[in-house]
Each structure stands twice: as structure tokens, then as C-alpha cells.
Length: 312
Ligand code: ADP
Ligand code: MG
Image 1 (cartoon, protein in one colour):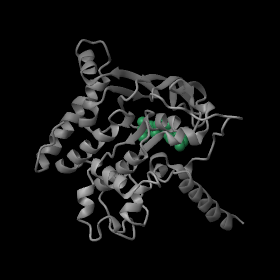
Image 2 (cartoon, rainbow, N blue to C red):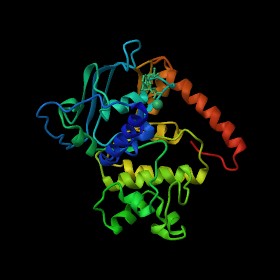
Image 3 (cartoon, helix red, strand yellow):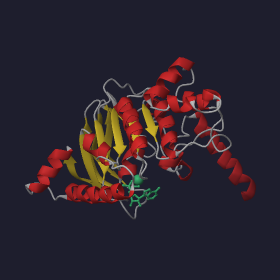
Image 4 (tube, protein in one colour):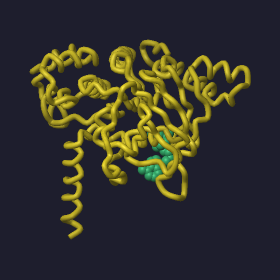
């Protein structure tokens, strides 16, 4: 029985994922490992997003009772702001995004979007309003047109071109053997990591959600790709509330707010300048300042080995 059950169960989960527009979340949230633990409340209504104001109010969460992952996290993101989540591995950054997408409910505390507790609205309505750009995008074995249109099935070809242009991938696509009809994915043309991420950005631009969750790739990018990605991102995140697990100096410095997440807590928050100044004057513990210095050093080393220097 077990032998039969496992693949069927796997396929069932996979199919449900496609139906619910989850394919992109697979990598970011390790969805195959995540049981559906949350259920819609009885008679739950739909989330109505007017501004995209995101608020965490004293959120505590543990995956299991041996260890807490979030320990009283509070923050407030104004409409349209871009917030960088930074901090050591295991600090709780991914968990914050998973809770906002409601893969889990907090053990205590609340998460609000425009004043509505997300645990009290239909999950489908929540997820319609959130776009996710994972570290590593999964492409379907289908045309590049299909892969971008996946962001919104009723989009016209023109809409797809516009999104691809905004995502800085249109010109690249025109160099493919069959243009937008080129098959991509494992059994077609293989795209680089930077190209796949721009496909994910194009999808998200097409979906046009008021809230965006972004998990930046950790790997170093060459100067040109870095610039393309930054331009694509600034177009996508403009006027949209964005939470980004940030690894790139350019993203961190340009964000409206930086939250330093460590041991399940927000240990420092503020703009880049405020956090650096706070460290200088002893108003914070200088955790961000130390990370910043270290990244600058790493960047310096990288610039020495790469042909062109990457400007932070
Ligand atoms: P970060 O994204 O900042 O690296 P995470 O949010 O992934 O941190 O992890 C926060 C804490 O939760 C860590 O202690 C991690 O080991 C734990 N954790 C993360 N995912 C799971 C999971 N699926 N099951 C159990 N513990 C987890
Ligand atoms: Mg993480």
C-alpha cells in the first residue's frame, strides 16, 4: 500500500499546487515538506487590499515545541514601501514570509494587511494579492510565452510583451530560435539563473499583486545581469509593498526600511543611514553595521576577481 500511496499522494499535492498557482513557491517554501496546516475560518470573507499596509503584531511561532522560530516579531510596513529582511541564517526571515503567505498561523500575535487579520480571510483571496519571486524559479516544459502568461492566464500577447520588457527579458527572448514560441525548461532551452528570475519577475508584473515577497538569489551575479535585475525589480516593486530577503548590497541600501532578524526577533530596524549612524553613536548594538562591513569586504574580494567592479 505504501508504495502506491506515496507517488499518488505526491501527484495529488503537485496537481493541487498547479491549480492554486503555487508552483513558484515550491523552492522558496519547501512546499513538498509543508503540510497544509491552516484552514479557512468558518464563513471567512475575502481580503480587500486598498493600500497594501502590512503589520506584524507581536508574532510568535514555533515549527515544533522544542524551539521557537519567531519570538515576538512586530513591524509595520507602510503602503508601497520596500523592506529588506537581513540577518544570520536561521534567524527567521523565511518564516516571516511563510507566515505572511499563511502556510502557518502564528501561535500568538497577529498579522494584518490593511487592518484585516489574515487568519480570518480566505486563503485564496490572500494569495491572489501576494506575488512571490523565489530564489530559483521553476519553469514549465513549454514555451516562454506560456511560462510568462502563467502570471495571468487571460493576459494578451501585448500584455506579456509589456511585462517581459519591464522585466528586462524581452530583448533576450527575441534572440531565442523561435522567439516567444521557444520551448524552455528542462527539456527545452535552459535559461540561466538570472534569466529565470526575470521570467518570475515578468510573471509577477503580469499578476499585478499589491504585495510582493521576494527571495533574492545568494549567488553572485555579473555586473550586467545585476543591473538588469535591479532595473526589473525597481519597476516591479514601485508602488507595491515588498518584503525582500536581501543579499545584495544594492537592494539593501535602496530599501525604505531594513529589518535585522536574529534569533526570531527584530533586533534593529531603520534605514541604512539610520542603522549605520546608530552604530556610530552607540544607539544600537551595531549588528547591521558589522554585517555591512563584512559584505563590503566580501564585495571587495569579489571585485578583485571579477573583471568589472560591482558598485554597491
Ligand atoms: P532564515 O530564513 O533567516 O535563514 P528560517 O526562517 O528559515 O531562517 O528559520 C528560522 C528557524 O526555524 C531556524 O531555527 C530553523 O531551523 C527553523 N525552521 C525553518 N524551517 C523549518 C521547518 N520547516 N521545520 C522546522 N524548523 C524549521
Ligand atoms: Mg531563509
